[in-house]
Length: 166
Image 1 (cartoon, rainbow, N blue to C red):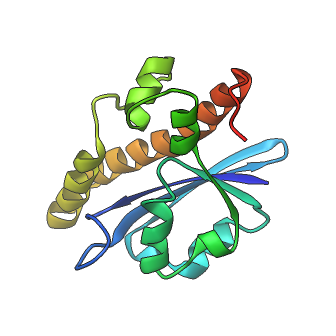
Image 2: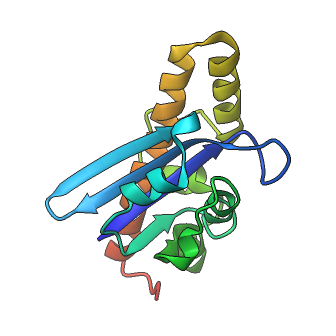
């Protein structure tokens, strides 16, 4: 079974940084389910629970960011437990350049929040924490959901176009 994973954080690994949202979409046979862990709900046990039955995790730049970050905080090394396919690397092999949003745009993949970028996610979390602004949290969760669910779309495009990805 496959899962698609994307995280939002307060910054890079180290210091006081921590994950703010972990989005995981699991492709159960005949069922598509997306779940998001938020703030203090992000624990190693919670992440592993969402990944029960999964064999392969798909990310975008997850080999360099998402998976190492989660290994650091909350301390769950998914690289040791699951097969991992980094769609950024597969996109590069297919000749696609740029980050996830640029590749989505080039391929005509829609987003609910097309003008948002990663740093906006940091600002939304800060606004949520400082002002208890639930609209900011809702927007952050929508942004993360787009990231997670568009990983499946990107994978399907890459596979449907018969790019040699293996």
